[in-house]
Image 1 (spheres, one colour):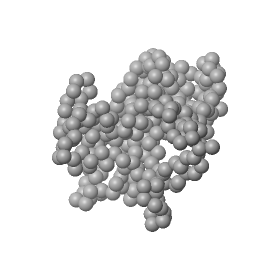
Image 2 (spheres, one colour; image 1 turned 180 degrees about the vertical axis):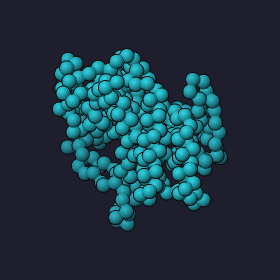
Image 3 (cartoon, helix red, strand yellow; image 1 turned 60 degrees about the vertical axis):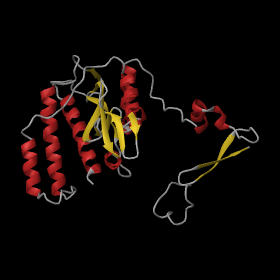
Image 4 (cartoon, helix red, strand yellow; image 1 turned 135 degrees about the vertical axis):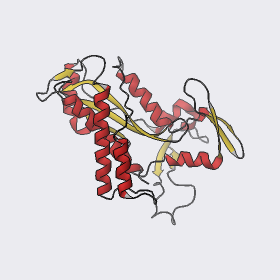
Length: 284
């Protein structure tokens, strides 16, 4: 029930922590680019909200000059952990004050504040990786991780009438058997609400900062940003089954003639069953 507001707080707190540390003269004194992705699961499908942040190896300072990061790490682990913890706690308290959080029925507001204060004295988990040589490889890895969702089909080892068995190990196989109802419950826990933006771009990578990004790319000897070519459905289908792009009757190429709008409350009573979001195609 708090999925969207907690995702917002986690993403924004991560962004602000990175910017504050990066802009400090003790660090690089410049604003980098960030691609941040929110994840809500761990390997056993239990809730584990966290963000993955890909950060450029430098940024633009106030004079519009590119500044490269110093050393193999962007900033110290201890500094990031303490600053992030403070920003998260402060944001959660403000959300509570504005009635944006829904607390459990048996928890009072003061109990929630006491819990935050207690957690604020603990050590939080912030992991900072070394600088990568190939940023495109890291971005590709994250993209595949996002597309896969909470669990990949290859991790499911057995399905019976009552249970689902899947692998939740990382380097070695560890099997977990869950009742069907529990497996479905855990999956549904990670379904984001409508219009929740869980992958965001900040700093140099923000949509409104393409000019700054091109300045940085020029400094590094790279070309201007080019928008990726729009992939047609025919191109996507050809990779899996080229025969599906042609009419099975006449053999001519299929073309898009109509798109049925996806399901919504207003169209619930008027839409024929099984047609929501379908693409209707016809041959020349």
